[in-house]
Image (cartoon, rainbow, N blue to C red; front, side, top):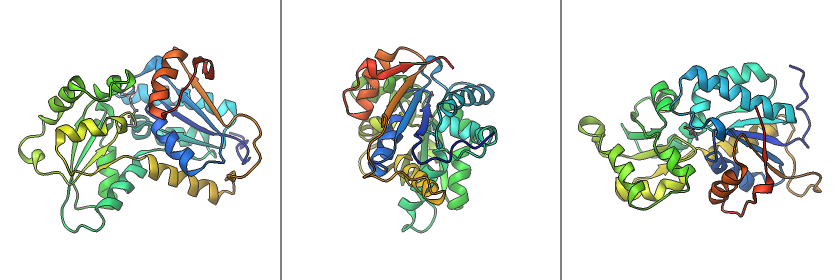
Length: 284
Ligand code: DGL
């Protein structure tokens, strides 16, 4: 592919199956305020997390292509499921465009948190069925912390709850309880850390803490992903400085279905008021 991406003025492309990746967009905007962003939520085909790897790869390639066609200087796969299943394919398909996923930054965040503590640590990774089945988090954490004891827990039903904007209350806590009850025996040993291994889960953190019990640190990949993006842009000389004069639109939202719904729940994730007219409907 021809490298049209070497222009600091181009936006950063970000995609997720739905609004979950907006948790990553928030961290990016907090860290890289001078950048422009174009976010695609593939809501027509959500959830990705219960699909087979082949389907996740196909959907991810199509979502990425839509962003690449718009002209982006870097692509963020703000979806753990897509990062776990499709990152090598996306890097190959869109080379030399830098493509950054969220699983490795998530593993780095865990290892940073646990760094001062010696000896075996028990880490619970909550993610979608596809992410947990593929074992990408276990591999990424073990590569940095070989002595880690890692338990994966597929919690796919939390995705539609978050898309519904249901972040707390008895129904949400009961669903979380039903999942956590599966951790018995060995896997039920005291936890040193919970990884929110799905970009839809950070807004549910308080509900997860209410069920899992107090004092267990929770980690997600948003901040470390933003750090990885900054490092990549700096390395390639593509960083757009904060004080640069504004040209064009700093933030664009694309969705593959129901812009008004995206605006409603997306606004909750971003903690801003998002009007349906600000969300463009696209076919991919
Ligand atoms: N937000 C996505 C993730 O981080 C997946 C949600 C879905 O199942 O579509 O895994």
